[in-house]
Length: 215
Image (tube, rainbow, N blue to C red; front, side, top):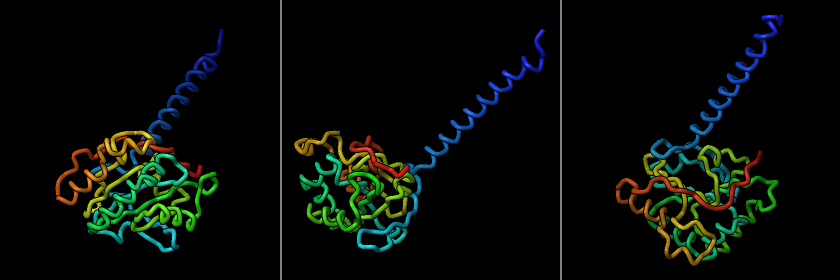
């Protein structure tokens, strides 16, 4: 006759394993929920720009801020820069007192990582005009915002609330010819924000290359 202790032990072990899995699931859910959410305060950050200057989100309090995740090695990023779409947006809205921050969260070990001076040179060569280009090689800020692709776009209103997160436009392709036919969600959201209106499409699907975060 089997020992009652031996019979119960596998059940206890299985129960412990299930509880452990449940705890892991809860932890993962908490990690996802910790990412920035539309309608909530935008996560504060401090990063160094390509010129070596320390920049913070707090220094732009009272202004509308765009966050643009970028990586010149990505064909989707090149689509919007080579066509002058992204530089045009940057110039259009920095001219309306909007702060535009390009953020590069590509880890240093990635084959398409660009050092600060090289990244600044690439953006300048494309006639880009962000307020600043920020280096996030550790991926801390990208992960805080839940940035997944390049480009991945965010809008923070003057009160510091995240009011838009998603794609630059409605056609998920690397073809520049699709830009004209697409709805530009960033232009639409910024115009609504500047007019004091709620953003009609506050969350959309981002598209582009997966961000190469430091593991």
